[in-house]
View 1 (spheres, rainbow, N blue to C red):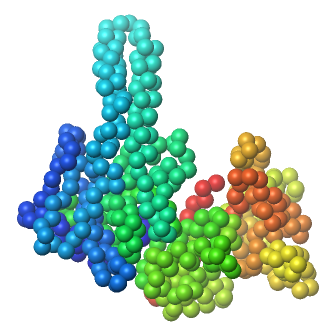
View 2 (view 1 turned 135 degrees about the horizontal axis):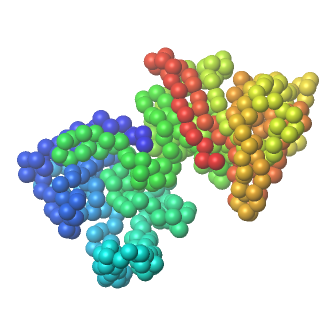
View 3 (view 1 turned 60 degrees about the horizontal axis):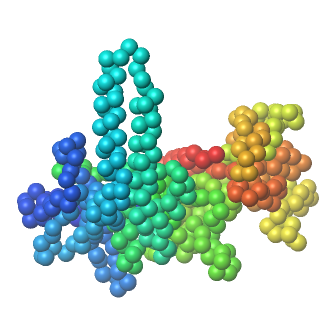
Length: 445
């Protein structure tokens, strides 16, 4: 995953830590026995530079895993961050089933060895043993994962299972033991503001990004945003469905993509959103890290120089209605003054919207209530940027007459359903370098 914060300051801290480990000034203390297959492997050294409420810098350091810890001399101005869950806690969680799992492993190995001399292998008994061991291992891992709780940038604290939202699906072993989650958890728990993050491989010193396998599960939730790209000028995020682009009126509408980014980077412009996505629409959204970039990017949007691509699932089969596979439509909508933000057709006073489309195919849609029905996957290429342009182009009779699935304004939205509209690609000129830049973000439907 993309590094959520600049790396330069933290990289210097990592280099110092590795140098002092090699010189012996920083000691590595083994907490648990390391397995033979991991004995020769290195580990990650992570650093997070933060500021406290007074603006003073705090340098947090840690290492990946739970089997080692660093012993620092008092002369170093670093804070060692321990694992979120200790090795002792994990051992205790595993202990209940540990003996039976080992016994089953011995039985399985003995049964496999015995069956090698039999013409027809008696596999049923082995398979039963393997299945029993599998259930016990899953139960033990579930107990371990239940120990993990993480502090968020917004002050909340959630368990790993709350983050996953699917307790039945276990995350990869070691989720929560990488450097980045440990460092952010400690920072948010102690009201520290992250400034710079870096992770280096020990002993080589090679710089690595937070991993896709484990960190990508946790960090977007802990930070409040999934950052696709970030530099000194712009930040590109994958906005989730259900999150406002900018805050609305009232405390209940304060939470937004803009609010969350400014929580992480308080120095950026107060109104940093360069453009907006509907609350129910997910996908690529660009925010500015400084005023100059904000103005330059807004100008590109106003001049129609930004190319955008969306994907949607429409509630029906368009080909049966005689709709061509590709085409372009013009529609004219304005706000319904008595029912904001709903848009209504108005060929006289409505704003012209131009939408190109391509039908990608028909698929089965599995609704949250268990219903399965056909849906059409459509790629939209809006040539203008009107409010609810793609939703009205889909649902209104002047367009396709088929709403996007989960559209609460122009179709229907059942319990547990989301709007199946996603901003999947964007192309523009970088505001500083003036180079063409393209970002893609796959929909999860």
